[in-house]
Image (cartoon, rainbow, N blue to C red; front, side, top):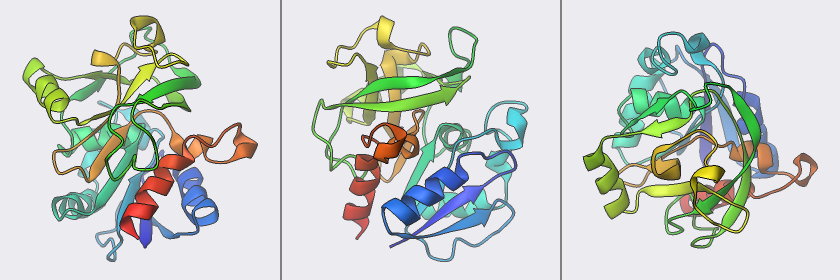
Length: 229
């Protein structure tokens, strides 16, 4: 297995993802600068968190037009694997690889804290090392994480089990008080119709080693690696 972490101007979680993939998961991984036009046959593409192009216009709106994104779209269309985390999720939405949009947090403030997520579908490429309705703790760090889509899109996501993570309490209760940003239907992560592209706002790479306070995020990387290998 081989992975690529895309680096945009303003990415700041690229090294975190690279470290987890290489040093924790023991997978071959390279950085790929956003102006490159070749993914060199990798299996997994990671769009990391950060502030690509300073989040001007809309988060991810400029990064979506970086040369490498044409290859990322081809990669996804071919059924290969993509995960976008935080700003990477925003880029996936702007690129049309996932439906919906991310609005400003309902508090209109940047939020950085641990949150609880409930696993809504444990049968995906990205969650096969987790259990259905399992609660995991993963941190968020965003100002625009308020997921929104139209009613028809939400019905499709719900009906096809494409909502992968929802914000919840420590014991798995779904309610507004445990939704940090106001996301529609408490959505924290979704996949595309093919099931090979995941976008999520929380940062699994920041909870993949015990020295960081927990390893719940590692289960997501383990799921990907075990499926691809």
